[in-house]
Image (spheres, rainbow, N blue to C red):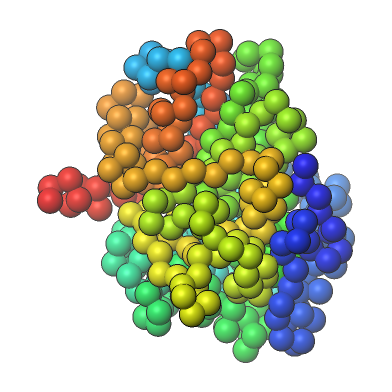
Length: 387
């Protein structure tokens, strides 16, 4: 079970807020407004309006008949977050937070991004609501995801490459938090992953839980019962926590998060504090966050959301790794078999689902959260396969 001490923002022993006093005031104000509006009927109506009319929800839970046949074993369903406007799950949370920012009177929005999908979603919403938008992105990721950088700039955002550290997602988060500390009186930080100091993990989970709210209803309509397993990739953890949320209290449903082999935060991490909150973290011998690598820029983070950390240590969820070769094979197989090109992030979940499905019977059911589409990754995969 996922126990949340909501006011303190803890999931078991993980979470909390370890930030300077001036930033804590901003977070307290953010939390007060979140609690004030999240269940407000007018806010919910507006959120649901934009999810339907702008994002394109509800999206399908697609039975992958050819993949099911090819893999043998369990029935495979795909929760189609790839069909959302901007091409990934990120827009769910962005719409919710931008509506919150609007009610709080913010005019300037900042965000971090790894693969670029959260940056694109944030730039999209800022364009729609006429807000200044600054996106921090690791310099290495701007190279890997040049198309998404152009998309963000096309949407009116200013993309700031971050060269410090490895020039990846962790460093982009560092830069965004520094900006918030310096400009907290005028700035709303639209955090994209289920990480960071309280209340960010709870806010992101709240808005992303639409994924499992829909999939639970859809699978009951299609199959008359719950799935045997829900599988999602884990980096910062937002798509996975959204995919898991409405199944956490259903003990018959296995919850499985899939990590990159070279960024195994939940399989090898230890409790530590990173970016103002406590979670499982990959540390080096000196106790600093360890360099990580993934071919999927959105999974390249040495920490993880605090609720995932709790689900791991409590045994409620399982976390596994897959290799880059397995991910590339899954990327190609889903494309050729179902006509659906997945994001490299999502291909991690597909890769593990293939192995799991073969061990299950034909009357069992797997839901894969297809967190995004692979348009952004096609050029990168092309270059890797060419080598």
